[in-house]
Image (tube, rainbow, N blue to C red; front, side, top):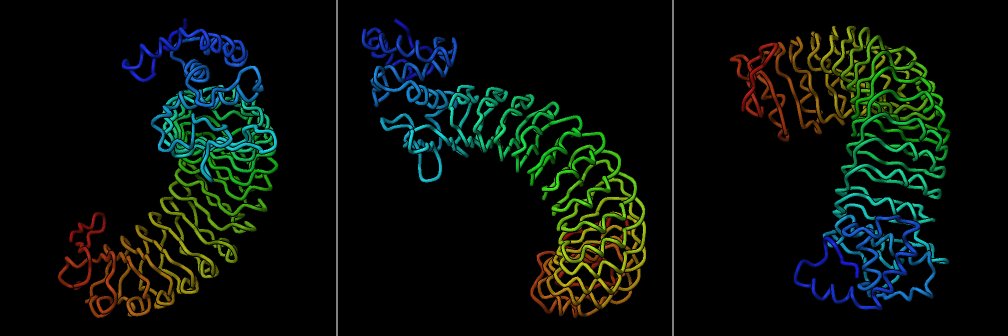
Length: 496
């Protein structure tokens, strides 16, 4: 007879198992199943210790459903076998929840209300495999690609490893493929380009490497493509401009390099484009500003250079613009003020911008976050900034700004965080900053030229989460500061 190699219940039950396997009825069931399943799984179904072999033996003798092999349709036998193979391949007994897996019930009942296995009720074919955050541990068996009507494969947040089976490209009806937050490695198979009905592709937070094949732009139905937090290299192919329905493209935190293809601007449906934390060089294509649907653009933390195109005042729908931590130089363009009807987030910190802060920023009436930290901005803060009535976060730290703070800062009634440290501001701080900004939680004043008693302005209100000033200096008093610094320009030694 055939012995069950590997796994099983340890040595204690082995003699009973061997007895089972020498039982003529069991032997006959094993032979029938081998004949049925070898055409789909090949030799793995006859190799001791494989998940496929364990699934076959389970069907032959341990499955409480005891399927009558002669009268059950081959499709239903295969389906049960494939899901049992998945169970054995991913350490099923240690899943966080079992969802009736391996019970006597039909596989269509192996689920809770929202997770598990789901079928199309009329024919009983599996359409959804939804096993997120369940502690699946092991390699994804290629047999999963043999479920002929699978529409959703969602196995994110597990401990799946190894290369990703290229056979997944056979799942012609697949709409959703979500394998994010696992440990898959190697290249993403180009065969995924055959998934012509795919709408969501999420392979984020894995260890994929190599190029991102341009085959995926064959998937004209794709609406969301998330390849972020991997080790993809090379360039984003010009063909990515061929997508016709793509709304969200996330490629952050990879090793992409060369220039950013301007063909991405051809995707008229694109709403969110995240290319941050890569090694892109050159310029941001000015043509991005003509993208009709683009609401979120982030190219922060790359090696981009040159000036910020004045075209960037033309984005029709932009809400969040991230250009931080690059090598942009030249002026902070006044045309940004033209985005007043839509712009909520503007991040330009960590560049080499050298100019005055344009008065036109006061036209950004929807803006909630502005970060200009770590540039070479000069002059003072324009009083017009007081018109940004929804502003919650403002940082101009580590620039070359000077002069008095405008009283109009006191009009920013939503402001929660204000950082003006490491500049040359001086004069008296307007009392409005203390008595009008009731939502202010974090205030950073060190390494400027303020020399006054801060208590009357700031210490008669609700306490700050963080409040830093140069109160180590004898002519600065602040009894409610959370840390005191010594006013040195480069490194203002701060302590509690």
